[in-house]
Image 1: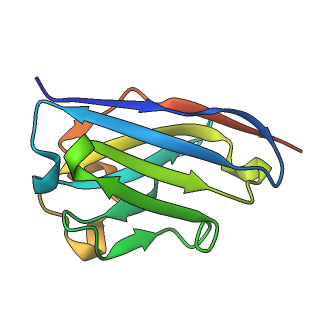
Image 2 (image 1 turned 90 degrees about the vertical axis):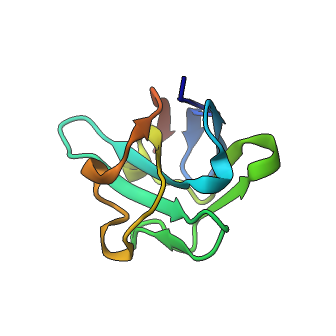
Length: 126
């Protein structure tokens, strides 16, 4: 059974940092691109960052470039999202999603993904 499980969310002050983890099982992580999405109340789910199977390249939403860093450890079946300089507008539920092949122009489209985790809440206080 394919599973993705996010962890690492929480409450942090503006300017703080969090590292999210996505633990995967039931499939060979090395064969999948992974993307982090987020969804704030009343807003659509948006793509935050995507990492290809090989680890390169990595894509980022403009709103998080220079602040967030995505990485993966295929041997441990883990994917990470390091979030620095957090802002209140980063508050959302964060999800990881898997797809065997990502089209560059569509990496941030939720409908492209095959598998999803349950999400982890990130709250940034002002």
